Image (tube, rainbow, N blue to C red; front, side, top):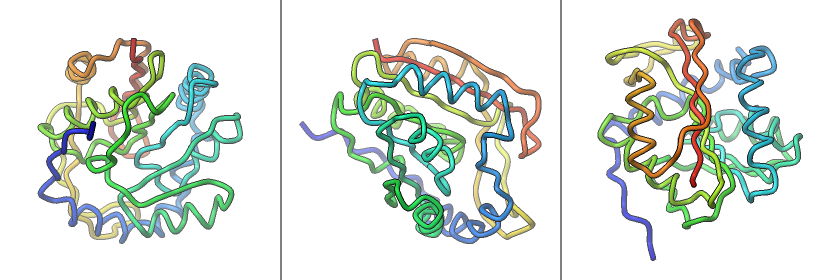
Length: 217
């Protein structure tokens, strides 16, 4: 059975172009290196241990592939996808032994019960609020029983309209801020059970950080 189609964000192409534009600076700033953030690294290590042996893992919005490679070093069968072709060029250059592809979180067509783990690691905050729920539902269907989803995102209320990023490069995207209760409700509606929550008061983006881990029963 084919997975239900997910509505594409109206600003998808604009967001893609913006990330293509900032890709070089993002890589130069090395912002995806979680080894410099001990609490975030601990969350990823816990995720890696929880999904080990459950099946393939997909890093959705993998950026230049630092977390993908980190998980591969810990013995996971992991691949990455990202909206930006320029970002994926960097990921393939930096981590030639890993598998990467260009794709949107809204157009993955994931097979049911095909993945042991999924990451949405600071990669879902650009999705409009009405589009995130069906994306999470698609993730839940794709997990095997016992599989885990980990989400890292920006904590707060409201939206931030970004016009520049990563060294004052011009961009055009919306950063949607989320409260834990809001995201837990969406995860529960998708059929996932809560596992862990981490809140950090600061991040490199100047906004508090939120990490949630959920499991398919």
